[in-house]
Image (cartoon, rainbow, N blue to C red; front, side, top):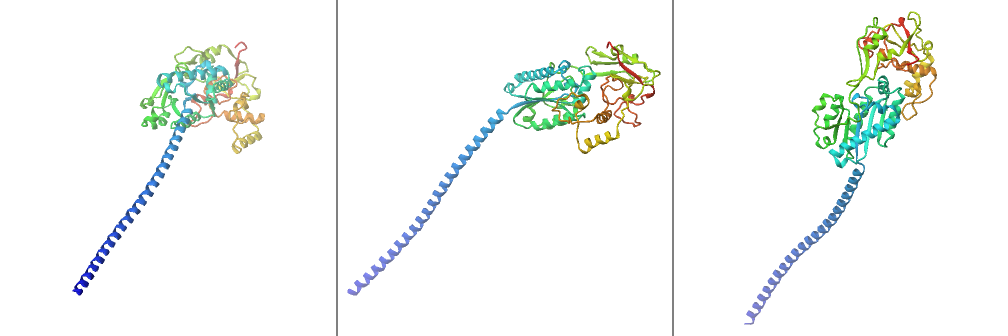
Length: 446
């Protein structure tokens, strides 16, 4: 009996131990699971904290970017302006003749242009009507001044400088820029200004006053497909518009009260150098605005001029022998340029200064004494002989009036002796008869 009891007790003990092992294993499994859950919880907590920190940083950065954007937007708004570009070399964009007469005329031209632009903007883009205007007009000092003198718009090239001064002084953002010699210099300035500002967000509109020349179409057509840029470009038309501009889908306008309504032209009939008399030649050449009353004719001028007798047309061709305020013409009434006696030393000195040192001298100051500075060219001292060399170099540039020029102060070339098929000087400027040279001057009561 006792043996059975002992065996039962041992059996119970084994059962209790087996149950304890199971409980321990269960607790170990629960511990493992709790450990894993705790680790996941800790990881999630850390991730959440990290995301909160990143979120706060992102939010702070977003706020900073927003503030920077608003600041930039405000700066763009404060710096906004409207640009007006004018090719003032072109007949189509010459201001009314009366404006060129004085410095005050330059101011009036600028004010009239500003008023016209503002009125146009009030009607088409009211939000831009009160924006500052930047006006840039470019012209060749020599080419435009000679043209205006030739057509009696101004009495001397100095008047153009006065006009430009008045125009530029009328506003801090207005400039009438007289560039150097060369037909393309003003064009390059306009192209450079346009390309610099067309994509500039502060430039709300560009009024493009150079629609006379189809060459500018290549510049503008690059922006036709860009709606945002295209809407900011406005063509400023005048009486002469290039045919190719019709293919551009830009807005356009015109200011008839600012610019002339017809070109300044010099029309003349073919002249026979041997048979034409001064009076018959004068009656065939007229200076006028097309479609407008004649303002000056060579026929009228002939009545107030006379020839100085000098034998049988054997006047000296030397500059030192020519009386003041006179010129030379041949038997066909063609202008003859007097001979300039150049000193070899002066030529050498001039070449050194201009070619080696690269100095560019102001012709208005050096030869006319009419520039007060700020032109960008040198006013440095030149000797009388060096100025004579300077004059001889200008003879290589063709006078726009040609053989009919009667301005004693004109420094440009009026004839050529080359035998080339192609020459900048016209056909009638070749073959001048020096042997028939006569002195021409205005009469005392002219």
